[in-house]
Length: 74
Image 1 (cartoon, one colour):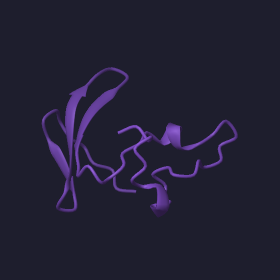
Image 2 (cartoon, one colour):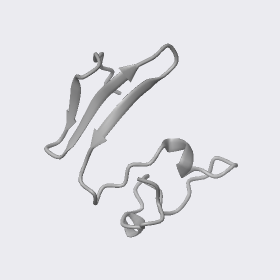
Image 3 (cartoon, helix red, strand yellow):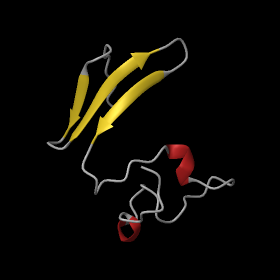
């Protein structure tokens, strides 16, 4: 795992198409902005698992057949 320190307004680049910007740092939260192609699903990890912790099909965890599913939150 890569761990970076960033200040508000600073960015992290992932490949040529994904930019992550630190928007605000609060006492218990960090607000980030993600600029990525519309074809890339961006889903909070907790939405990818059911109550038992099992991965949900079509999540952003590698199920290529469901990556364009419009039902996933963006």
